[in-house]
Image (cartoon, rainbow, N blue to C red; front, side):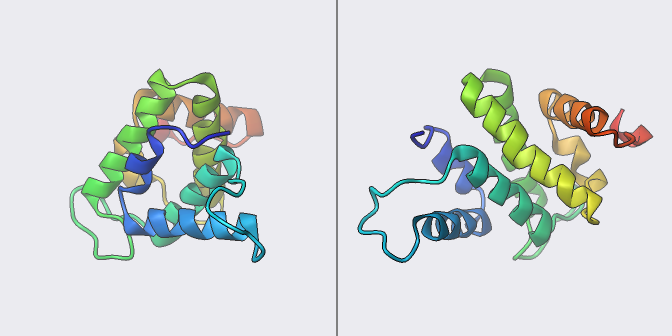
Length: 147
């Protein structure tokens, strides 16, 4: 699958995301890759990497900036605005990749201690709905603050 047109804007939100994507591509291609035209990882894999890295790098409360290597409130809002736009208006394959890649990775990180609550307000309605649906599908109780 080709890289979608919105990808550069998404990884442009933060150097942390851009670096993670470059590392994922290098890892996928392996040390014998001849040039940049070699195969790319599936979009779902790349988005899963971004979700995991976002959770690991950390995000501060939306009301205050956070020093690198985490994500500032502005970066968090921009990231989730772009993801919401894909979920709401993107092609089916892009919507599915965002949901099953990024958001499932983020919710998995939540299970391992990532606190989603401080950034929940930055998620758009389709993103929130997917997170609640995924919780229901996996049998995870949805906390009141997610409703």
